Image (cartoon, rainbow, N blue to C red; front, side, top):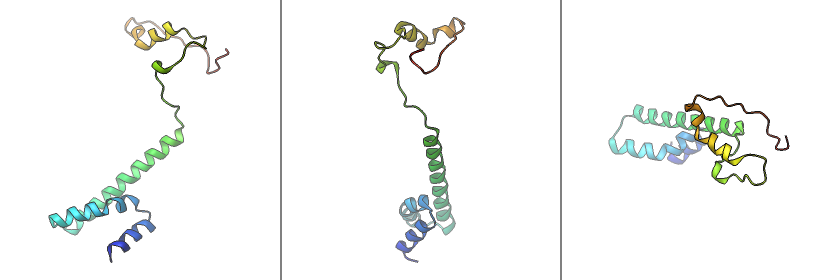
Length: 111
């Protein structure tokens, strides 16, 4: 089987991790004169890694996490939020002082 036929077969079998690493693994294996089994093991490891990575990316995109923000970019001017109080809470000093923190309210800025 020729190289292009192997690549086409990997594509049709949806072995995208193997396809992406085929040239690198085959090149290194041939240079080291590896046996067939270590080459296949490397290709299988590449496929497993690729599938795990795609699975994690799929789950993260499905989770719809909000965009990360920091206090440096937050504009307090048009809100009812006390900037000094929030910056004090952000230091986490209340945990060292063993004080409780109770947050009341939701995401609606009018309440």
